Length: 204
Image 1 (spheres, rainbow, N blue to C red):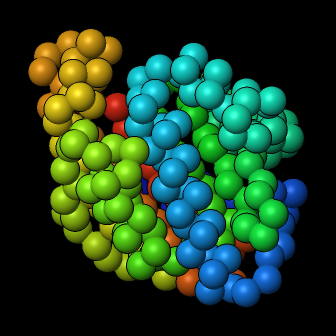
Image 2: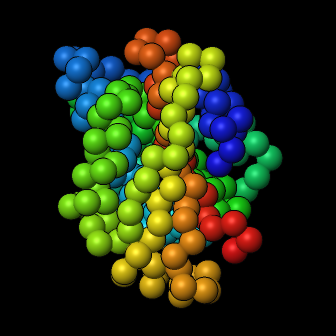
Image 3: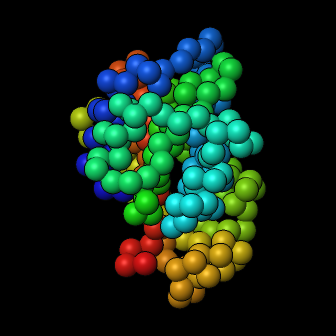
């Protein structure tokens, strides 16, 4: 997802109190909400990359994750004219998580609360020893501030079992690097403090 799109999603969500929740202990809450956002990115977006039907099924109300459909007035502007899925996940003591998955293959996860250091640490943990272990490598490409938002570009290069899965889905060897972007706002600035997004391989 382009940087402009990520920033636009932050702006839209900052005006969407319907997705907001509340939680005590700000430091722990931001860390654990960041952890949940990363888990959703990995288990929903990455494992179902390029498979909108799979994303819809994995996040269906009543599934193991506990997502519910976002209100239409929230979902419509986030999809920006595209067809797709927008669902919200709430866990006690944590901020709300919103998943936006247009049918064109992009996938984004929004976290009501977040911490940039926690997001980076949980991303690395997921790939090095978590659900994507032996599935690829994550390399930071660039990190910068844009309008007060901390943007970090990563290249996630699939390998092993994950590359084989993508090869079956898209063709080729499955090892084309995936653009992964995180955008984190300072605490309290926005109703949604982070967006994590990934795109399907280009030209696939």
